[in-house]
Image (cartoon, rainbow, N blue to C red; front, side, top):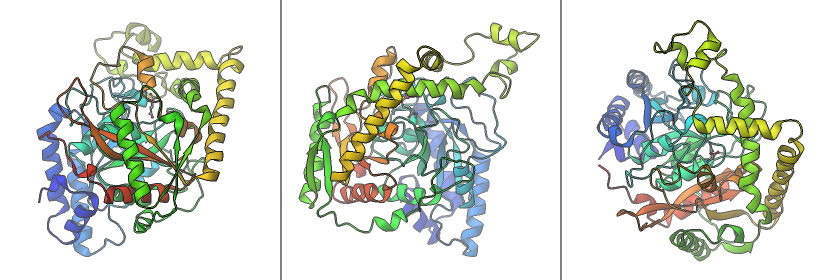
Length: 499
Ligand code: GLN
């Protein structure tokens, strides 16, 4: 048995059955990171000592039998570097926060710690989570284990590459406009963006507060359900977190009957420009559901075409406000610790260290957002975008009166080559075409592996993902459907050749 190739349920069984210890399991992952991360570049920080310490604690608990209802005890994971971890560097993959060590844990981290988490380290992303490839990271670009010349997706690219390269069992990322779903689809993984408010945002480095969602990426649907069970739920420290009952997501997966379930297929997501192999793969998946008894309903979400422009008004607007706190006074400034900058005071530091602060994407968003919110332009841009957002949400509300879930491709293309879109912000934004509407509406959505494509400019087959969108707080049914699909197909069992 290769410890690195287990999923959470298998690892949990092995730990409980004393086939291996949490320390052995953790060391296997740390070794794997050692052997592979030079090529994959998932990790910004590896927390080796902490991981071993946490694994030792887990072993003690397992030995004493203190394990009740706690499948994550001793299971190694990675955490996106926009999530605050007490005493562990949290950079948001940005130069600005290069030296920031949080004094507190995000709520989801405290919850996982209580459950015996083993954190292997903090993983790369686009700086402040702005992007779709990790190419906007101020440090380095992560690589896709399916083809090292390609991006793993973004912004939670390090989360996906670390799980896909068997460097950890699951990863916590964030999805503000697609950042867990798209990397999951690029790396043949399951990625869940829950309903807005399902998981507390407390302790996230905020990007777009009205759409930010802590999210989960793992190898199996069941694994995602296990993690969601542990971190979902009301948090007094986040007033937008929901009081809604937390379901037992894992328990729900046992119901495999999807007869009569109504699956909506929105015509706007199968348009020109969509890679033909992706279209075929999603159509085949839909046919599979039909053969299992689901009812397929062709439908329309008419405001879909406005989702990307609306997202790229609202998102920069909120970013311009959220990033204002990184003015160097409150959180320090990397240049302050940079000996090459000789300056007498803060303002001199800013002037002399130009280019060492925000990267170009963050600057672009701050400028766009400040513009859209400024007097005279507010009504024309921000207010209008909010009105269109309401129409996008209404499309979904009306659709969900007729169907139970909606299925679409996750991305219009498979993982693209490093450098392919990075020179054109607009091209990069268009990667979000199937992702933004769901985020603006705040709905839950899971991306699952559904096939492979062979790009003409590469030698490897590259994974395809489809997204299953659900009603508010109906994570249980989208995960259930995803699980039924997983049980009836083999895509998730295919692994990258990367060694
Ligand atoms: N690609 C989107 C953006 O750049 C998504 C980012 C995210 O979800 N964090 O805004």
